[in-house]
Amino acid sequence: MDQTSLAGRTAVVTGGARGIGDAIALSLLEVGARVVSFDKITPVARREGVRYLEVDVTDEASVAEGFAVIDKEGEAPRILVNNAGIQRVGLVGRMSFADWSAVMATHLNGFFLCASQAVPRMIELGKGGAIVSIASTAAFVGLPGRGPYSAAKAGITSLTRVLAVEVAQLGIRVNAVAPGFTRTQLIQQALDDGSLQEGWMVERVPMRRLAKPDEIARVVRFLASDDSSYITGHTIVADGGWTIQGVNQAPDWLGKK
Picture 1 (tube, rainbow, N blue to C red):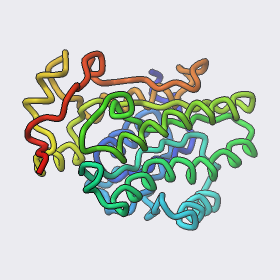
Picture 2 (picture 1 turned 90 degrees about the horizontal axis):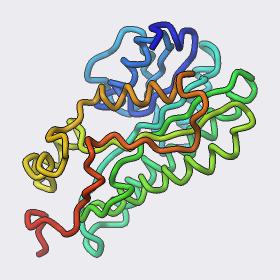
Picture 3 (picture 1 turned 180 degrees about the horizontal axis):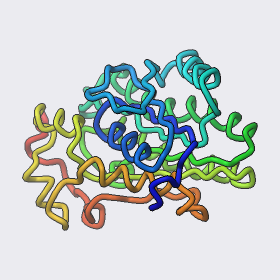
């Protein structure tokens, strides 16, 4: 990819302070984009060239305020990456509704709220745009203990298709990336709480390893760039081949007390 292919374009990356979001921000910077991170947490490592804003993507007013700051500081965003996400693990019947709601609000409501602010600005700017959301292989296979996460990610793939049709004639493309097991803080959280085991994951990935965040980031960058100018409404799976096998039962280590 031309190292200046996104020069001058403003990109909003939600959850950009760490993990895949941080890798996405860095990847977009490398090809000239002006990157604004929306996140509730302090960045692990501040990237030179990234504007960090404290934004809660589950809160309509907070999202609106974040976009208003961008309006004052520069050109409206032409790229939106919906990456913000959290994880809560528990079986249906034992998980609280509060945990369910928190996951759905961050992943799915966050997508809706940010797109609701970005799309009108992209239309007014008149230069087209690209929206890329982070889904997950959890949208396509059954993962015991991850009901809200899987449901939210499946919702992202569906909303991606709907929004793509709504804005296609306006020059705005909408796609998603579904990562498989990626070495991030969320995966580390699952390893720490025992809901995932690395050996179990690696055994089920044909490429026999977890993804690195920058490998996912490069797929996002492709979909945000003009190199994917005739792709819209699709979810690209980046999982080392895992979903061609899937999981057919709950692992013993998840526990059913």
